[in-house]
Image 1: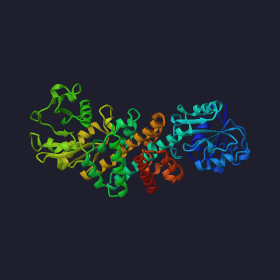
Image 2 (image 1 turned 90 degrees about the vertical axis):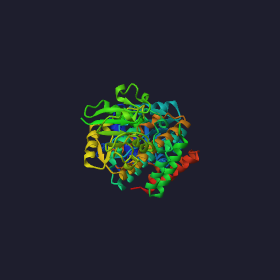
Image 3 (image 1 turned 180 degrees about the horizontal axis):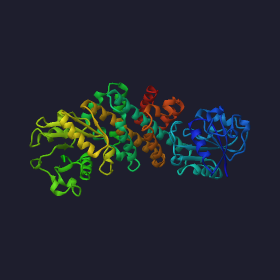
Image 4 (image 1 turned 135 degrees about the vertical axis):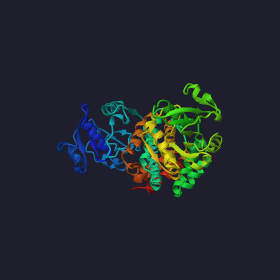
Length: 251
Length: 251
């Protein structure tokens, strides 16, 4: 069975460790965390280490740390020529110290520690520099997810950018809607079926086809009324730039 | 049983007619469409009219036409002092010709003819000028939906505005993500689990708590890399204004 070690203790590391522990297709042998207490109750003591010198031989080391720490952490590894993959969407393979074989194992999802995620439905994007390494990544990825995609660093960077729009900016739209509701004593719950249906629609229709609303129809009266309702200059600017963009990209 | 007539043939009218036809709690007696063929195959011929003079006595007339047409259409009704409700989020009761009793019956959802909607989960926002009229609206609304909210015109306008952010602008974020994927030969399907989880998260967490990403962390390096990847000036502007707004509203 392939042996995997996870290095790191952030949100992604937590979700990966959890899914590997409940998985009989690969063998999670060690978890490295500078502060072991980050995994207390989740990882058995004998598996948990905080000294790089204790790292055992594994087929794959998953380095799940912040983008800025990848170079430092991988330079501390006390071995050579082994397969070391980061879990970052925004980072090239070259950020991994060249003493080992660099790879990427990027789970595309928004992870919060407080929210369980069905890892089986999380796309895993893999990249390596040889077919042998890709085989290892593919096997480990398929052991936890039904959706495994091979892509190069340039595509992964673009995917990470598109995920900022599809997730981070989308969530900010929800936050602004919530703010408008609070100001007018409206329960945010009213919007939940609309939010769910808006996401559900693009599972079946291309987003440009799913578009509705005053900006698409160029309903100037509604748009002017909305701009008058918004008192915050920042929200007015966001409303205007997005309405213009919807119209410009109209099918 | 309460008698209802629907006037109009747009997306909302279609979904309302469909749900009333399959409903035994209220009696859909007539559907008015200038062009009867809009409902061919859906509405029995004897129920379908295109002449206002043919409108029979009903407890509620639902006028589901474009915002701009509400005043005109309601001025054509050949009767007085009956209950007439529009289905618009953005329009005051005063847009309904004063010869009848004005009300609003606003289903908050994004409707496309090609996509079925579970009306039972669609919030219906009702407003009227008397308790008797509210009773009629409440009964009809509850016959098709579990979620009925009473609100005034000012709240409905604010809700309509917040729905533009939660639905129209959110869908535009999906469209931009799709565009970035296409440019880089990435299948948009990869983003679907992320889109679903982003929507699912705010069913349980307030949006400000669900926020993740480079703008929240003020990860300047990732943000600069993203801005460099974007070649379209419009997308750069959207990226910057939304990143700033996320940071400004940070919890």
